[in-house]
Length: 438
Image 1: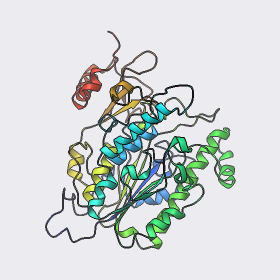
Image 2: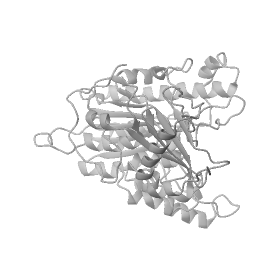
Image 3: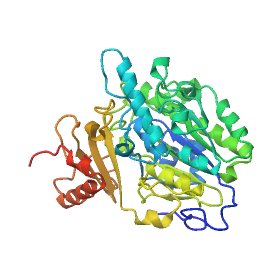
Image 4: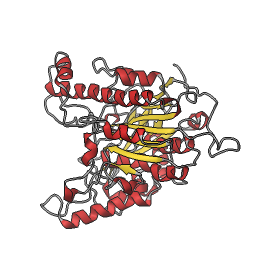
């Protein structure tokens, strides 16, 4: 197995004497939306074509065992932008509790406004980067109300459901209809370092790919729904290629830290337009696993790492360190460019929450599952909102990547050990677990 190595060793944790004069890198964060962890050429998919992302992978440190903190769009993106777990930033769900028959009565809009206030209470990536003179731009998916609420200096989303917005507004045109606002931001940076949040709602539904791509996949599956999803993955790849080409054309790639991840997984149902049960919104790897890519020419040596556990919570510390800043004390992620720190990592944690929050002030009230991955082992524990009969599940995700065989009854020591680590990580969440009786 090829191991990851980095040019120049680990980055410093703060600006060092003699280094502060170096220009900080531009930062481009590419976020896929609703895509399975294996649905890329570089991850071995037998049909999905992703030549541009395959090329990016060849230029990057590729972490194949990456995880999202949670398998739902809004809280996952909130974790990325804040570097905090949902129970830390209090953004656990897509929406606040329902308060009546109408989708957005005044009292529910008021609850949503209170949810969005959490973005202003958190030290988000663009807000912190502003200390180093960064301009920042929000494009694509964004759940935190106006882009300004997240600390961006410019953006495309107002996020007000009362005005027909919620999670993207004009930003949802990026990729599907235009790339011009992104290009205009990059071209207008004027020599300032910039941070680009590039999160087109792709390959997310609606699965409406170009006919030329759909025809290719229709001959490779009997399901029109699968064909549309696969074609969306290739369309998304093309959109990423357009962004990469623009960075190259403007001579910016050499001093740009580029990171790639996905908000959560997706497994397309063959016979219906929706997602399969063990993917999006689920505690299984189909919902929470994603590859992470890091490209920084001259600083990161391209290599493939199929062993190290990484998380989308690592993105914020990585970006901040590259810009000469340190992470906040509450950030639990690691700098992906610090090989020594990653070598010491043994475990990553995550949670699953209800789509609509139960109580926006009490994250544990919306908890469905807690999970942790330690080496080859993944433990899943049911929370107070778990549906159906609660069950403890333990999988060897290296030998059983699709989590078909529950080993909890046969490996009680692993269950007990990882459960203790979960309890130490979030005591309140562990105390609320809905454990089955003996």
